[in-house]
Image (tube, rainbow, N blue to C red):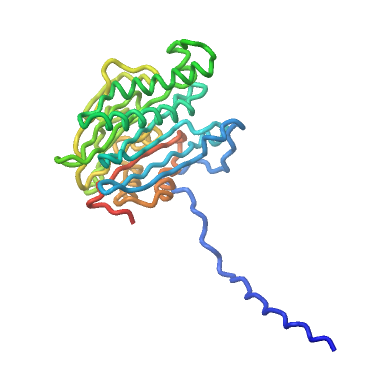
Length: 314
């Protein structure tokens, strides 16, 4: 007589009716902009994601950066034209970085921004290998401009593309530099081409100190009315140097961040001062940057550096 079949396994427990956590909704700062599902960029812009973020720490510093596509580009199927890159120079424990904002009138500015950042970071790392002295901003800027010229040479199939031809394809702003541990402390060295910016956030008081001239600031350390992007390299670069001390955070960003920030005394300034008191998780940093506020629809990129000895990641 055959054996009886084995008993059936017990039924799985019924799914809980308890709702799961709601997905993150964009943070509204003041009156929000219109909400809609982002549209895909054109089919050959697949290498430029809507958003990206990064975060890690060395013994001396904690880094976060994020770059998000603005509402205008999300709606009109255009790729994000901002970029950021960062690396560690392992011999000195320095953090090297670059932030770029492709000029909207340039047809391939999204590629120009990425390549300018890559070239600047590569060159600064090379210079730190060669000498412990101050960085040479003109050397770094020339290297980034040459990278854009080489791209245009390949794209156009000509031996010597003119500056105008390069700019029509790849024009971009650039802020690049390094923060280096020294005997005096964490030394900041920055330069910029174009109108992207850098600030010191005083976390103790919630104030912002611009390191370059801005569209609204009256107390910048260095002011210039000339705004001209790469591939042009001005004879005199805008530079900024100093020490990064507690309780300060270095911020480097495109005008998608700088324009709504203004002088830092409004709702946007309060928003970032509240969330950047200590280094947030990288994904949350990107979420904070992707706030919604009416009339501000540009791409946004922000890089932040905290001294590690008093600001541990949470």
